[in-house]
Length: 251
Image (cartoon, rainbow, N blue to C red; front, top):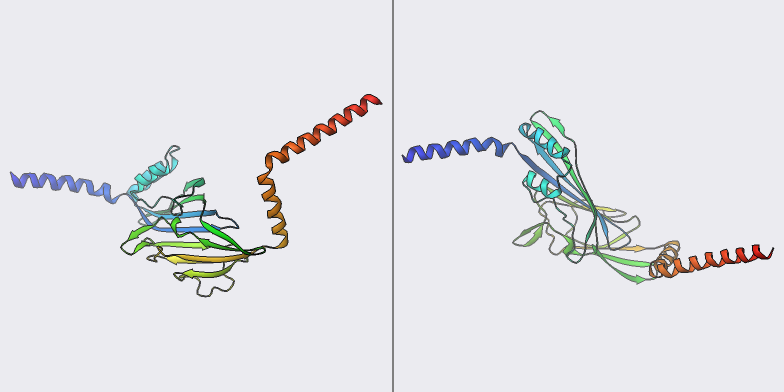
């Protein structure tokens, strides 16, 4: 009787193997952070996915599904990697878009790229250290990667890339990027799998031109006094209309 029970269990497990092996497999993750002359950043994350031959039709159905959310894709992929990896606990995510790409076929299956784009706030801290000169530092609490005994680290088969605005001057970085080897005039820096992030440091300086300073000044005034500016414009238009009306009546 015991042998019969074991045989039945073995048959059940064997019948489940094709379904388990015929699923999707996330092979790598690439996270690119585009820093700006502000505290927010644009983030683009790309998951490379292998799709077995037996799962190609399922991927196509999932891709064509109108109401399949990112949570639904997480379940379909059986992965937690499909999430925002640049997220300040005291910040927010906006303008999130998700695009599951088309399949690229190979002899033993197919490959696809799933792209997650969004804006993350409070990614950097900024301090004015001189007239028109600003020091930016990346807030290490924004990272949402894997936790190990030593702290947060990059996932296996993952890459983190930070892109700074043109004209930025790198002041301090730790750990050293895996790319490039020469930081002179570089605007793109990458770290590969296993790099520790718990004590991550990335500091750069941007010197604004006089034109940028003037533009920033008037932009700050506009943002601060926007209702008053609109009211002043309306009052000016009303005054001109009244003047034109009175002048017409006296002619």
